[in-house]
Length: 172
Image (cartoon, rainbow, N blue to C red; front, side, top):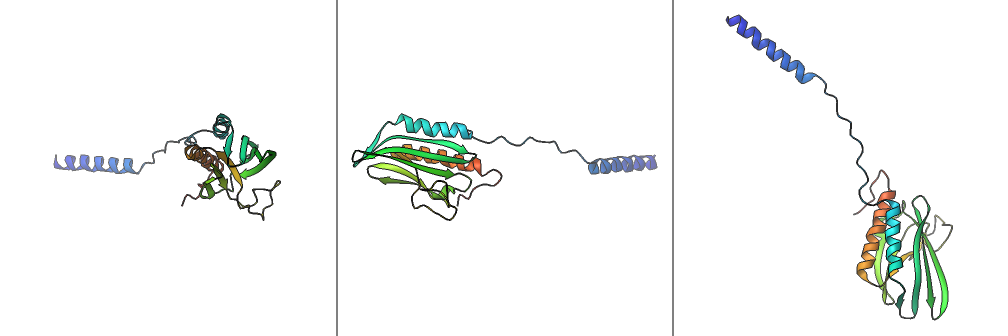
């Protein structure tokens, strides 16, 4: 009886040992969906803010219309129509969201309103862009309040993150 007991213990131990070594298939997981709004929703959000604020005035500058649109995958163009002392002007600035660094996006107070600028190699006051040119202040928005400017800045950063595909842009 003692031998039978030892044989049972050895058989159970061997079975548990073999079971522990058996490969268990790893369940396949679908990649996590991108968090937050899509590029199209982000562009629409920014344009809604631009359109909803009406004319932005400060000192002798009146900005009557501004918008962004996707001209190529991950390349936006910002357009602003304004008057300085009664003379009409049009400003256009392309933004390469793949090359843009979120840390280069600045919100500054200027002429009685808030400007958003983003520095990036090859983009700014030239179209088509020259890869050796870095614009001092490529503007990407002008609004009447700091809070609205910060909302737009967050949306631009989200668009930059969407365009960095597999790599995360440097935040620090």
